[in-house]
Image 1: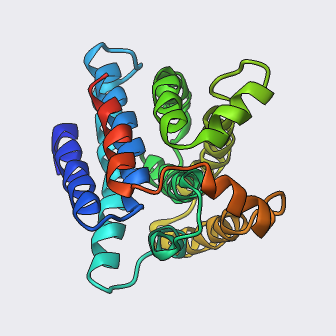
Image 2: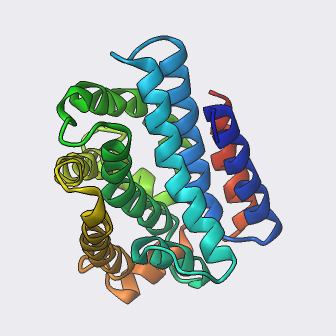
Length: 251
């Protein structure tokens, strides 16, 4: 892929497949599509220090997700953190937020740092740091829209928002910003690793991200009984839920 527009088209294909198959895979795909469109908007408005470089990063970043999905779909091996996220779509008991967080975990904790290192020269990652941080503010600008969509299909999110003293984006903001801090550390490590050892670093980071995924799948604060109660508050119509999330893409 050479353009972000091509990435958006591929994400649309996953969203369509998810609707046809009533698969929760579409929850993260929608969230990621919205974020990708917002980064493209930021590039078009020249919000980054180096906009062509940001295009390269966005494509490298997306490619890791799209390749993981293609491998998984064909029964081939993909990274553990992505395998857990995709496999979770078969679990009818998970909350919508769990599906979204599983995707974010693999994508940000694993893919983002590795992608950042891949587009920069060996041991020269630091010039990317400011733009890397700029992505936060670009993505934060869409969090309220995503949150509004989640509130329509997932009442506990609305409840969490109210408890968090009016910080409407508390859940998504926290998840994304914490993960991005970790991913910059990954980018620095990967950048300082010779090419012949990169796969080993990816394996180590993937192992750590997979550990986080198991915590998302079985969070200590959510007992099975509490999860069941939250599940009752969610819309069980996967297709409708995806459509509500996807409707945010035209912001």
